[in-house]
Image (tube, rainbow, N blue to C red; front, side, top):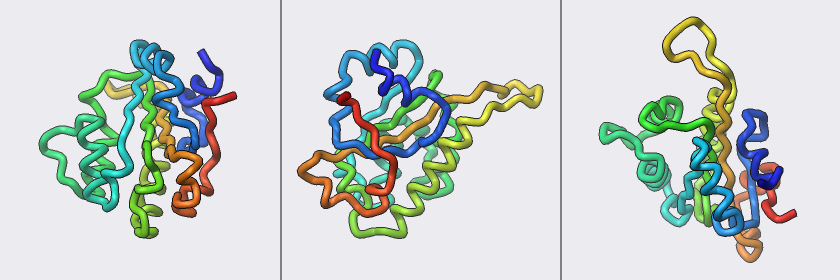
Length: 168
């Protein structure tokens, strides 16, 4: 198992990353092995995320949000901070074709990154208050992936994220 891949399943930052590697294709069998151990990997399609409704729909479909999901920012954050319908010990969301995510919508992209960062941070904190929902820290990372050929089209906000490479 690659140390780089395992680094996605620590609860330590950075939680939002960029990559020019096709992680889902390159890591294939190893991602399946991690999933079998409760470390869930969800691959989303950035071409479906041209606006916030598309972001909500794609995350909702891939992370199996409940039918009552309201397709708005508050509901998005609520669902991502709950996820009680999934059994997992860690989550990694790979956003393929990141150059299409909220392209030209800088304020929305800023909101999305801030929201995802807050959600990842929340999961990274253990809850130990003597209640039924107590839990240890849980890794949650989001990797925005685009090909080298498309890297100039990736919004400047995503280009500032730390780089993650599957390839040694």
